[in-house]
Image 1 (tube, rainbow, N blue to C red):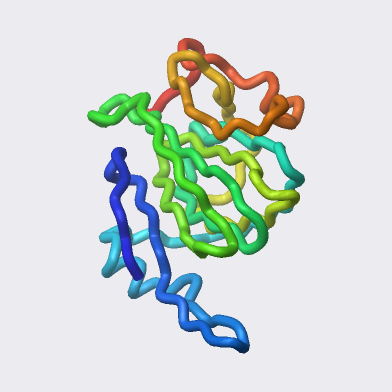
Image 2 (tube, rainbow, N blue to C red):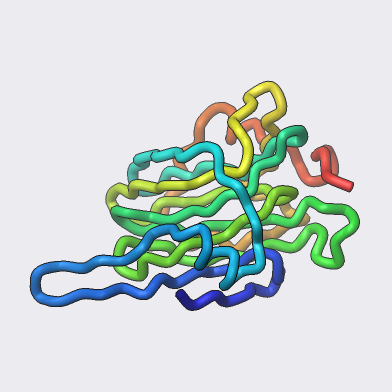
Length: 182
């Protein structure tokens, strides 16, 4: 696998080795030993999640203030623009965001460590999104920062229309009112 550190170095883009021919393709979507060797991250994953969303759906920016989750995310059908925001006050990249296109074609994965908010917007007609997490979902600790917060100034792709949001995401907190990690 090829690992590329982003402008926020703890967030990594991971490109697997894909073996393909006229019949189709094969790749290891996860191998614990290879992941640790390539990234230096010794994460233990405890939960796998799968979501499907329509074009223009924006999910995020989510995080858990307690039981923070590291996430290894990928797209198995369609295409999304995926975003990670550093919420760790002690980090030199605190308040910075990075984004990447994840798709069924590029088969890339994004490592989003604990201490980050995460979100994505669907660029294709639909997208199926898979992610492994390092801690269990704890709705009582879930937080949401507004996807369009002016401080973060995330450059989301132009969809032509406003993104489709859940009520929770539409009510996301502004950066100035958000809870952070030490």
